[in-house]
Image (cartoon, rainbow, N blue to C red; front, side, top):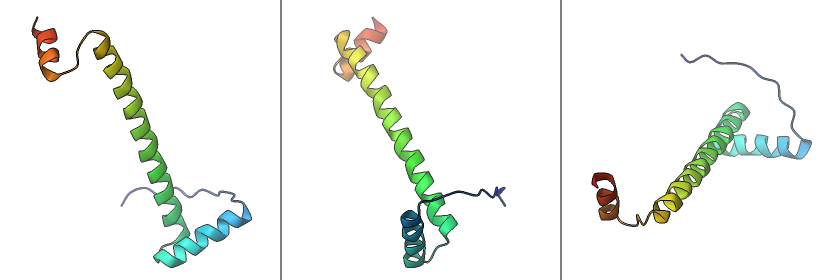
Amino acid sequence: MPKVVKKTISLPYELSLEVERMAKEEGKTVSAVIQEALRTLSRKRLEEEFYEIQDYWSRKAREKGIVTEEDLERYLHG
């Protein structure tokens, strides 16, 4: 079983009601709802970082005239 660490968090009253409502509707614990939200946020941040890196390298490739896979092959193999 994975390690579990207990944390105490503070939520604004309205947000705590929303989390409790979501948990009840989804048949989950409040902890499970918050875990899901954190995982979703983490995936979103990783996705944003991926697209930033992809954009950077795409710009660098275009600067060198690399637009297609054939251009890349020519560039890599001289």
